[in-house]
Length: 362
Image 1 (cartoon, rainbow, N blue to C red):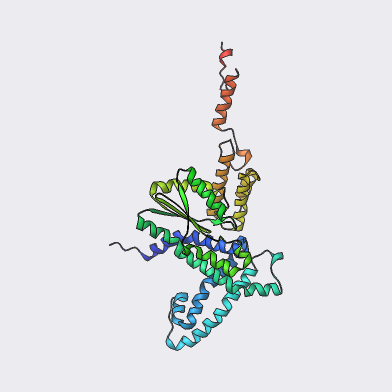
Image 2 (image 1 turned 30 degrees about the vertical axis):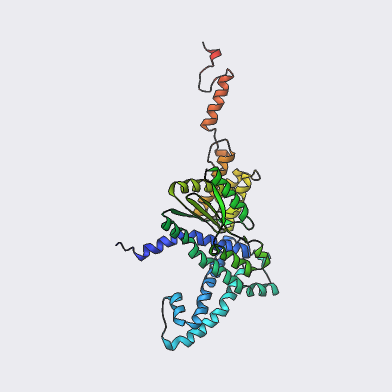
């Protein structure tokens, strides 16, 4: 029996869950607070830390050693339990208020709440912390479920991290169903399990009417012969036999460029992604977007995603068959040059390579 080093196991889990959890938290913050610039990432980290620690701290009031072990990998002697309980009680009151204060710093300077609005924003730290905790922790369980089901069925499992835009769930689902149909994969719609719907329902319950309007009421699966896809607001879970899954992934990756979902997670990257989507509809200029992308201050992973999206749109819209980012770099492609030469030959002109047409030989 082969025993894997614990570090390898944690590294594998981290690779599987990293982007899914990032986008899960990103989606939750978009629904609750709107899109957040990278300059506010420290605030988001603090909110996430407070949200995850808060239930542990509450449990620590009754079970001090349990909380200290989870938070600091230490246990405390019995005689310290009263003091630990007191500390946990204080933290249980303070942590959501810290999260609420940090959320008030997320908007731009002129839009930040003040006075009574600031007090209200801080007080909302309690329901918001609970909502964020459920989304983050639940996705840690939901994301690996596909892999477990795949092992049982002897299928392959793939997760494609996305962030469905508020109000865009049905559009994305229909676009993906159409993409699969065009790839020759017949699917039918089925409602997803309640376990997959829980994070959205918690956000809707705790976030109020404004949030409830942005959260999908139901989650759906697209099921076919040897294939199954579940669309979450923050994750696209694919299960299927190897060959079908390969065709499905190719079709879906092409479709995600032109639907109501983000593949990036920072506000700066999502602004560029919105522009690429607009360019696909003829409402923006690809060359200008390419110039912005060249100088954008982004993580390499986000830059790589945006570069791929830009090339997909360029290949769909441009006859030049080039992946250059600016018009100045575009030359005449070999295909266009051959086509132009053929037209000149048919017109009785030189073919561009020093020869003469049939009518002018001699």
